[in-house]
Length: 105
Image (cartoon, rainbow, N blue to C red; front, side):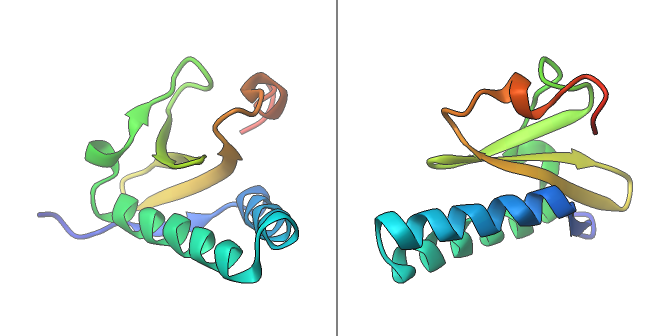
């Protein structure tokens, strides 16, 4: 297996994680929020190891974008030669076109 790529979190993706955490603290519990963020973070580490096997192309959203499911959330990312950039993390039912306008990313 080739060396793992470095995982980089875009500022908006970090904001998404904070929003997810606050939401689940409010509707469930701090433990639930922590567990979900731990699952998302672990999935991002695995993406660094196998970005093309674990995710799928999402060119219909943005060219070069990929995603993987960490139910009920979807991690959107891009792969470069040296890194995996997590660009956003959304609930799987969110309206994607609203979050990926043509001039962004």
